[in-house]
Image (cartoon, rainbow, N blue to C red; front, side, top):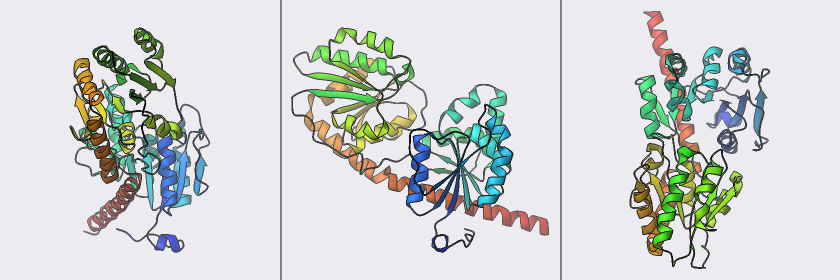
Length: 384
């Protein structure tokens, strides 16, 4: 690892000056920036999006690009280059392989660069056409090192980036905020999910599976709680209309209120119908709250669940299998308790927010080391 520039006692003690490049309104971007700042790093965020409702720490230095129009990733590249030269970071961490990845590539940043891939930028964009795939490949190639939120997405990245080094940096869960809570003792078993109401997330399958369980357990108190909003809400409400008042639509909830929503559930379900998803952070939040989960075999969600221990994994679009999994959990409070406890321990061991920050810091150190080795190789080549 190269020596960090001497810019005060913090940097001498191993903390870094970090230039993040990404969308300011994103809750994940805010969490990374604030979390790194809390650990003593000198954090700067370069963004072509105005901040949203999520608040940045006072210790995060925000830099807003001059051009916020549709072509900002092209026109603001010069600005990003000048900003990087001015801030002189130890590491540049670009988030998203398409827009901001393109901006960073065109900026020709001289500092070590870690490109963090999020999901749609590698699953969806390259499949649009050959030109889009080429742009993504070139953006990945321009970075010193790459980062993925999951092992399954790292495999997809390798399809476009070859044998480039990839660090695994999951979106962790704040295990002090997401904690187990006493469940209501009224005899009602509450199944629920926190997800945008899009068809691809299988909310319709969840309603159908719940209807099967409710019919077979007519004498038992059962409720399905749906937290989220989206374009398919009308169709989903119509689908649930024959289930009396047992399906409750709560609408969208702010992220800070998600722990309270989870506290009222006994079982969490995420029945995505997608072939691929980058991660399953909502599933981990439920696990941190001590909830057993039922998920489909979509790669990202399935990766964060231990089958039979922290939850149950069922085939996509298999309403019968989903209903059977829900029935097992509805019928056994002991199974719900054991899986919930195991889920909490699983998150603490592998997906805590503290561990995620440590993994990101290690990715930064590895990126700086990669850049140093590359520079040494170029030096030897030029001297030969």
